[in-house]
Image 1 (cartoon, one colour):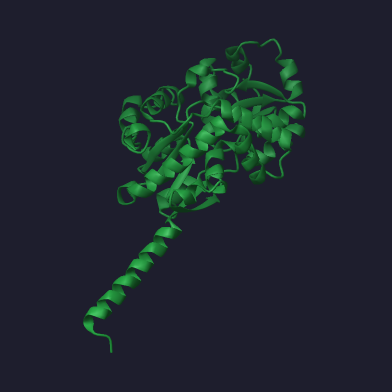
Image 2 (image 1 turned 90 degrees about the horizontal axis):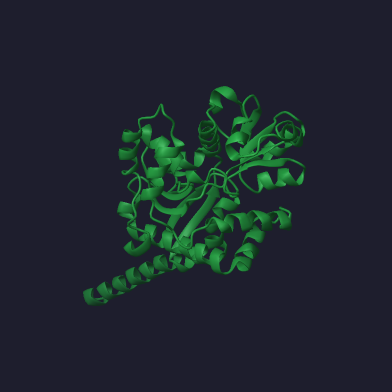
Length: 334
């Protein structure tokens, strides 16, 4: 029978070994994405290049379409997502709080494509405002009511003095089906981002309004894509949140400094996409990608001013926005 001292030493050694094993596995976290999109390249690269593991994280990355990704955080079944701050703020208006901890993109890269026939009919419209005004009476597809493409369309319509919800017939179609609906002439166009817009253009559609091209640049900076944690998570797991941002910072750096290596990593993830189409989509994304995760104060303030309409209480929204993000994990705060 072991004497008490030997027993205590043995137990201590077992606990230390267990602690080391847990540390080697990394802190567990679940990150859900709302779609398969080049917009989420920093996450894909962090996973496939091993940046999460090297930061000491064991991250389960999965996909839940559209609003379900944010709902997973709200319901407590996921820890992180990356979405538009606009959507996060809309949820906070309903009392569904989450916390943005890093800005991953501040430039709006949403686009409007029209069929060749519709674009030809409206060819007299030249400036972005004229092109926005010419959308009146058309049938356009967006992915979801009150989603980011819908909000972008509302913004450009307001600049032209029309109401997107009243003056444009909207239909809701998942992104993979948008181009098919355009080809079948079920819609005059759709609102989304590359590679879906690029693919439609390759099939003969016309790029009508484009964020990456610089149309309606006054919309920027906006909370186009932010890393969001579930409410209270970064209080109890602050180190995990820091490591998550650090890993995504490495992805952003790779995209900026070694784009060919970043594109090669994405090629594995998008192996069914035409390589040239992926290259074009990535190059557009790269031009709008920051060198590292960004503070979000200005972007949230500008989102309130531009992406919400005159019917919204912007003073209340500004106050609410200041409660749903923190810059403690970005920049010099790390």
